[in-house]
Length: 206
Ligand SMILES: Nc1nc2c(ncn2[C@@H]2O[C@H](COP(=O)(O)OP(=O)(O)O)[C@@H](O)[C@H]2O)c(=O)[nH]1
Ligand SMILES: [Mg+2]
Image 1 (tube, protein in one colour):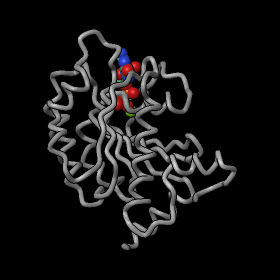
Image 2 (cartoon, rainbow, N blue to C red):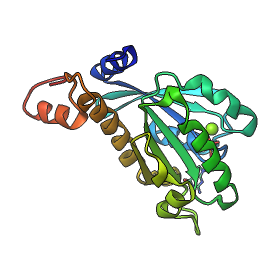
Image 3 (tube, helix red, strand yellow):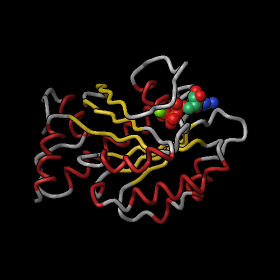
Image 4 (cartoon, rainbow, N blue to C red):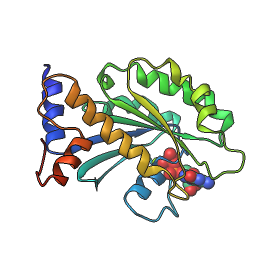
């Protein structure tokens, strides 16, 4: 077991996860983060550096890194890869013109060694927009089926309405847990098993 794996397992035992939000500028990353934190999303302005927010979600402390996606800021993304448990890639489902750009940037990031082992959640955001591309269309446009290096999932959602954000985050937390648990070494229960243990009156990890 590598050192990184041990660090990750310990973090998961402490129920603490690091989520890195990336995607093109204006895709809705900061709005999604605000929604997850239960904040008002009106008046959100472009992220010029990065924001770190912490929220407790189903008993897990999520350290959320929200990084600016403007073209000039993308070279700095690599500074945030280390120790990421899940990469949350946000797509503006109404922005057909920049889908190719989104695909290229995503695939650039997927090749990063320091993200090996991270779960990949793709949020097909802005589903409330009339004419928005469906998750299925985005899945094809971003060539997601070709991802073999990571566990991934695409989740249609809307930061404007809050729809389906929780389902996406639930998957990310569960997938990170599954990997810790079944990835060898054992000793750390995945979220579902933890919940089961809680129901039985046992606390913490099984
Ligand atoms: N219609 C709609 N607009 C959204 C949604 N999410 C974000 N926006 C808008 O998209 C713009 C960019 O959002 P922001 O969160 O700053 O994107 P970021 O650059 O990726 O952090 C803002 O005007 C948001 O109000 C959504 O789900 N639906
Ligand atoms: Mg932002």
